[in-house]
Length: 467
Image 1 (cartoon, helix red, strand yellow):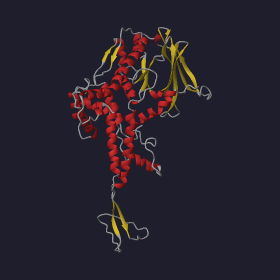
Image 2 (cartoon, helix red, strand yellow; image 1 turned 30 degrees about the vertical axis):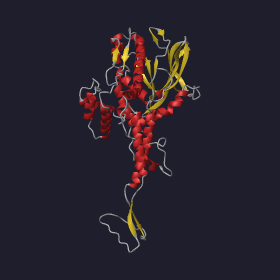
Image 3 (cartoon, rainbow, N blue to C red; image 1 turned 45 degrees about the vertical axis):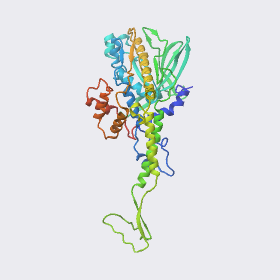
Image 4 (cartoon, one colour; image 1 turned 120 degrees about the vertical axis):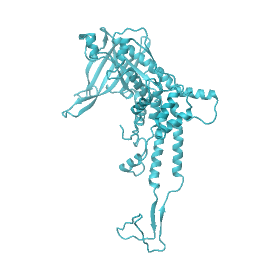
C-alpha cells in the first residue's frame, strides 16, 4: 500500500464532507446538485441555475450554533506559562479560543477534525529560554480538517486502545521559474509508533515514480522531551460525540440536503417564472413579408388587411408555479425544524410544558455534547503542549459555555426578528437589543458597533461563484 492509501471510513464519508463544504460555501450550482434539463447546452444550464438565489440556511444555522457555544465565557484555569502560549497557540496568530472556535466550526460542518501538537524543526537546545521564547521555538497546535486525515489505526497496547498510526495530507508551495507563481504540491505527514515510540515521517514526491507510489521519505524524527522519546502520538481526534478515531455523521447533513432540495425548487420556479412572467404577442391569419420583423411599442402600429386575423398576448395560467411555491414553503418549514433553536418555528398550538422542555432538550443535545467534547479535547492537547515544554501543572481546566437557555426570549418573536434581519426588513439593532435583553450577548461585545463588526466578519457568503 502507498502512503496516500485511505481508511475505509474516509472513503465512506468523503462525499458527505464535500456536500457540506459546497453547501457552506454556496458552491451548489453544479450538475451533482441540480441536474441539467434535457437538451440544455452549457450556456443554457448556467443561465438556468444562476437565475435562482441560494438561501444558505445551513451556513446561517452553523454560525448561530457556534455563536451560542461562545456567547458566554467558559471556565479556564491553566498555568501562567501555558496561558502565555495560548495567546498564540498555533504560531499563526490563533489564540486558544480562536482554535476552539475553528474546531467547533469543523465539527458542526463535517463532524470531524484533529489537532496535532508539533515541535519546530529547529533544535532549541542551543538557545536560552528567553531566546527560544522570542523566536517562538516551542510546541504548537495545528488543526487538520477531516479531508486531510486520510488514514489511521488503533492498536491494543498494554490493555488499552491507543492511536498507532495517523496519516495527514498537507499542501505546500514550491518555487518555479516564474517569481510570481508557486506550484502547489501535496506531501504526507505520517505519525506512528515504531517499537513503542512516537515517530514522525514526511513523504514528498519522488523522482522515482515506482517508489512508494511516487513518494519518498525526506524527513524522519523521533520527537523527545528531556531526551526521552514519547510513547504516544500527540494527536487529538475531535468528533461531535467523543474524541475517538471513528467518524461521526455531520450533524447538519440532513439540513444541508433539504437546503439543496430547496435550491432545486427555487431553480425550477425561477426558470418557470422567467419564461412565463412576460406576456408574449401572437398573430394568426397574417402572412409576413420575407425578412419582415414585427416590432411592438407605443410608436408602432400593425395594419393587417385580413378580417379573420387575430392579435393577442399569450399569458400563463394554471397551478404549476404555485405548486413549486408551496413545496418551497414546506421545505423552509422543514429546514427551520432541522435547524438550530434560533431558526425553530414554534408551533402556534398550545403544548404541555413537559413536551416543550423535552423538545428543547433535544435541540440542545448536540451543542451540549459538542461543548463537552471540545472541552475535553482542548485539555488533551494542552497536556501534550505542557509535556513538550516542561510546564508543571496540577490540573488543567477548560470548559466551554453550555448555558444555551433561551427561555427569556419568546422563540416566535426571536424567529420573526431573525427572518426579518435575514430578509433586510428589520435592522440589526433590533436583534442586538433582543439578544441583550435575553442575556445572550457575550461580555466581550460592549456595544452595537462591536456586534455589527462581528456580524460582518462572520456572515456566510451566498455568492454562487465563491470557492
